[in-house]
Length: 239
Image 1: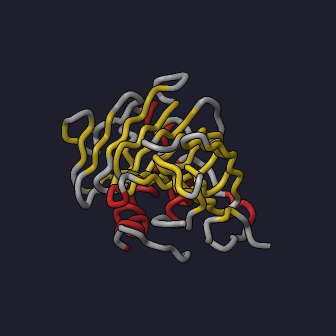
Image 2 (image 1 turned 90 degrees about the vertical axis):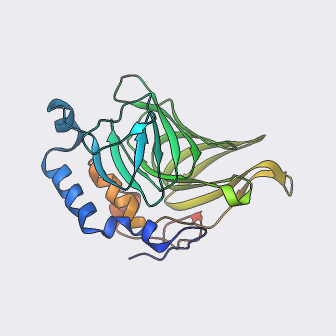
């Protein structure tokens, strides 16, 4: 189990992937052929749901299918894992987000996070982004974690866990190329003259990203390399 720092989150939220029901759900999802088989058989694309959540204002159940254009909200203690196209998502409790349509009904062009937090793994593609109140992240093929810290004036946090991301906050622009967790704060008003500033790797684990990657037949950068770096938010792999 990799080391992780918590800020405003409980340990059980971060270790959801260790639960027996999550492991069984992931194994069944992979064994049944993943998302292509689910689409062909008109099955749900929800891998696992615990607690209460809504889909477009109505109660969400594991039998439902989440499509682009939908608005999702999770309640206290909830955990939601689902896949669309070549991307997989894990939504923390007390989160609200929308997934907007890309080139097809089953491709996400934009994930708009309004409250809470989401971890996600994205296969290669173009013209896709995550939008938060103070940050926009252009996604290529990558794994990321995004969170809105309501207790800090809705300060936005973003970690490029691996891959390449085009970041923008206020007048600041940066291309993040990470092998192992490059993290940022994004502020509505500049701090020390900057809208984007370095952060530590907070509130997410390597194992969560590995779990999501497996759902869409991918591997993380550290799985491919067979080694990891120091999880200090700088984004570098160990040698």
